Length: 386
Image 1 (cartoon, rainbow, N blue to C red):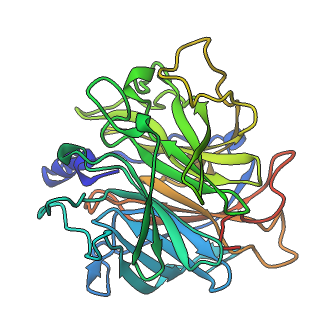
Image 2: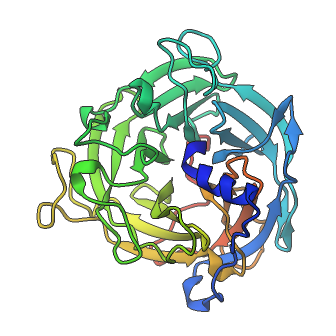
């Protein structure tokens, strides 16, 4: 999500307003399938390679190198890092590299404050390694004000542009239809074989209905399967978010949407819902869906009751029920499994938050052991690098 989305939060912080970010009292029944390993936070203003680390919106893991890949929405750059965790905690990550992603022209993308003709200013939100971890897929929410819609791109590990994958015509916004600004390609999942990319909208398309409120989950969001080799759309399903869990306490936004998705075997996705209400803070819930159970909505111009079947969802955990106060959680990946013989499944999920370079927020990493539901994952991790 772009910096502009949270400008009101920064203004509140600069005005000295305290933001009550503490979650409600943990409810044990809302964390049945996650066990907290640990939380690590970066010191605000942490620098690496001549950059200030922040805006981390996506994460993935390369098992061969034992490194995590993190993408920042400050322009378009990726970091590599080595978070260390065990059964008793999570240490702050050790950053090992930073690389600017490049435009098709071969030049680095221009920053938001200095646009270049013919070049979009990416709002990078999600990243996944392709098989072999020599190239990566990443998404941008678009540069709507300058006529650029959402983007799905492939780049080499050194940042070199390889291609822009075509998206269906419905992904291009208009005044009456298509995605909302700052509500587009937040989530990206890669099938275990690396052949299919699932793209998740954060908010409903305009013609599909209104976004979530504290009284209602609003309209469904669209999750689309794309053939990685050809860019051809394969199918699309509808996903129904929850209502906004807490009413705002200060003037400002109150919203809930999909901030990330992750493959859990060949037919299931983990779906992360991230909510924010001004003055009441952030919330995050993790769900699991079977992609075969939602009807195909690819040919539907508008979603309406009765013309589609949303994918049923099962609660994995409310992150606040882990006894933590989640920040703006936007990234999720399978991590290195816990050592053999550890209690539980040994499979680990790693989450990262986008601090929006806002002094009222924090870059937060969370590691949790995933205790699978019945019919759960076939193995720990399903990203293409494995």
